[in-house]
Amino acid sequence: MNPETRQRRLQAVIDAAEQVFTRKGIDKSTMQDVATQAQMGVATVFRFFPKKEKLVVAVATKMLEEVLQEFHAVAAQPETSLRKLEILFDSSIALLERKDSSGVKLLENFESYAAQFTEPLDDIGMFNAVYRKISGVFSTIIEQGKQDGSIRADLPIQDTLRTAMNTFGIFARKLSLQKNILVIEQDLDPAEQLQILKHILLSYLKP
Image 1 (cartoon, rainbow, N blue to C red):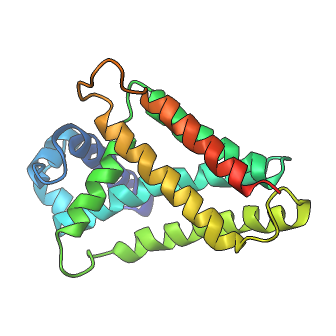
Image 2: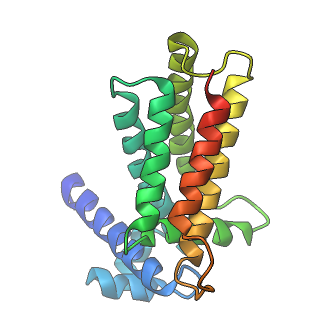
């Protein structure tokens, strides 16, 4: 198998696994399910990924790479640091408002799956490497905030902004999981809750 064909088939397995994991959940999915979705033999799937957890990490890494691309796009915009943070917040709100927020749910499912293991998952280094790249782009936005004066100078900037983004991201994922649960009529809409949290965080960060 030439490298180009191998890469194409590898990507087909990862794409199929993402669809299966989204539909059935990671725990209930089997390698045979993935093979069926990819329209190839299960032995071929195992040649690419000898263990299910390797495939799970590959899918999660692919999804995180999409987040990295978004961070790069936002960082490149001719905006202040504070405005870039607002854009990232709004992006999370938009994901929640979409009818299909399967990607958010699958990443949450991945975190739950990984937490079951007493040792780090095989190949988790690939996932962590992409996460470090996202942190690097985030640091670029932070440094711009120091220079353009859009963020309070009396704060420990990196710790504060990372806390703000983590708080917002975790809350957005939780609301995404809960949005299809029947709630009482007077409950506040999830997107409105995120808008309120966004304004609280941005107001705290402003000089």
